[in-house]
Each structure stands twice: as structure tokens, then as C-alpha cells.
Amino acid sequence: MPIYFFHIRDGDTVILDEEGAEFADTVAASEEARASASDLASELVREGHYSLSSQVELTDEDGAVLFIVPLKLFISRH
Image (cartoon, rainbow, N blue to C red):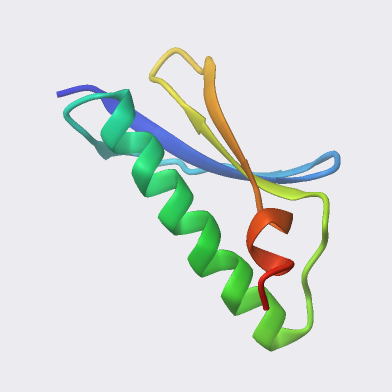
């Protein structure tokens, strides 16, 4: 199974997912990226440390960005 990575970007700052996770395909990985972004947005709002420019970037093993989920999509719901 392919390995996908979920990096967190806020402007020029990137927190790299060093381990990644296996998913059957990009669709399954993108669903996890959405769920992770929602969870992260909730956590950051509770802590009062959110940024509207933060996003989760889904990449493949070669580092190509496949999917981007802006956290502001979820922050506006809180």
C-alpha cells in the first residue's frame, strides 16, 4: 500500500509528518486529511492558538502535494 504524509503548514512554517501512514488510495488518504484538519482546528480553537492560514497538506512518497485542507474551513464553524 502507498504511504501518504500529512504535513501541517502555517505560512512559511511546516511541521513535517516524518512517518506517514498507509492508505489503499488517495481518496482514503484525503478523507483522513479532512478528518485530521477538523480535529486539529478544534484543538487549536480550544487552545486559542489557531491561524486562518494553517492547512494540512497531503503528500505522496515522492513529496508531491496531492490535497490541501485549509483549517479555516473548520474554524469558521466553531
